[in-house]
Amino acid sequence: MWQGLLSRILLGAVEGWREAFSNRFRSFIAILAIVIGTGSLLATFSLVEGSQAGERKFFELFGGMKNVRIDGRPTPREQQSRKDLSPGRTMRDIDAILRSAPLVARAGPYHNVEPRASVSDGKNVFSQYDVRGCTPDFLQLLNYQIASGRYLCDLDMANHRRVAVIGPSVADALKLWPDPVGKRILISESPFRVVGVLTRTDTEMKNRHVQIPITTAQRMFWKKGADGAEDLNLNLQVNLLMIDLRDTKWMDATLEQVTNVLKITHRGIDDYAFDTKEDWAEALYSRIAASRLTGGLTALVSLFVGGVGIANVMLTSVRQRMREIGVRRAVGARSIDIFVQILGESLLLGIVGGLLGIAVGHGLLALMATWMEPDALPVLTLRPHLISFAAAMVVGVLAGLLPAIKGAQISPNEALRYE
Image (cartoon, rainbow, N blue to C red; front, top):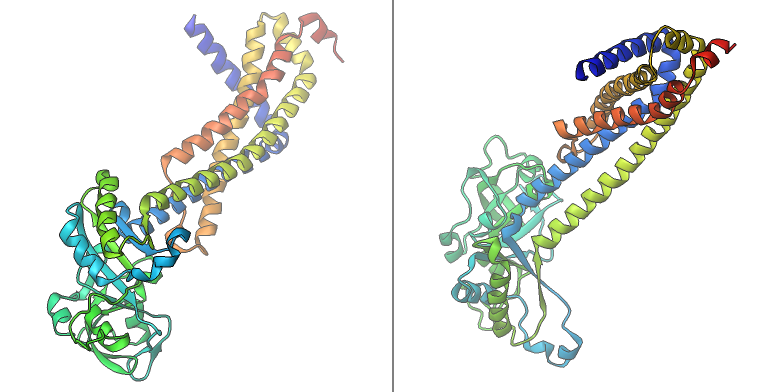
């Protein structure tokens, strides 16, 4: 039974190939939309995969799921009369979190120097800068890597040293290569010594950082304490607080611990908010799903049009080959043989269209890669190839069902009388 079915399928495929090859132009027109649809489907999935990979890389560059930012937010209406009781986000918050929230692995502030400081080497000015006062923990909090030299240390903090760690784009702009470490730069006309250079990343924002000890930034670029103390003032406000969780499975418990601490340091005023990467990840996956759905539906429309084209061509072919079908039926061919032959031809058109579509998709992606950003380049994996090719085959089979049924229902007498 199975051998007989297999032989009929093979015979149908051979006959289908002969018919398709003998009408090459008609077959090409029939599969053109399949080629476009398959290529579009492959390109869409590859672009989405590339975008997803880029977003994940960006995500990991800024600490991943374990990293939580503590931002400011407007004071709730019911607390407006008491909002001045809160000192805002300060260095004291970090000190309290590290002492009283054991589920926090590390914590640190950073403060953008305001007004923005100029950065130069005395001749060349780097305008697209981001000068930040940081603590030594900042290196691990945001997954920075040191390419050469060292990072800020506790002695830099304690002694208010005028040292800086710079991003590679800063070194480019100030022409500090081949060895920026030890060179002098000017921040707001004040001399700083470069002690380290950050590793270059695909995220240009991280390449533009200039990081100095937060104690030095306090002393030089924003107000001192009321007593004029030169040491780190825990009451000074900072732009942002960051914490790293010991384990993401304890996210809720960790945030509860930190909230309890901040309720004390902020004197009961809820003027802070947690920015967790869970929200970021959820938004990322929603965007990716929407892009995949939109692009996939567009490509499927092309495949549907291609299927209609194949069905139309196959119906025309059945009418033109009426006498041929009658002769085959007269010499012993069964309805199933005619059905398999026509369906095999339609499937063959789908397979050829799918293969050509994959080639077109590769060409389209190679063209697009010439002008796309490096962190958004398409990613070619086996999965989108299989999905695109399978879609083309399914369309080929579905498009051939109606013509195959009509061809199989033709009686020998009717076919032989057909002119």
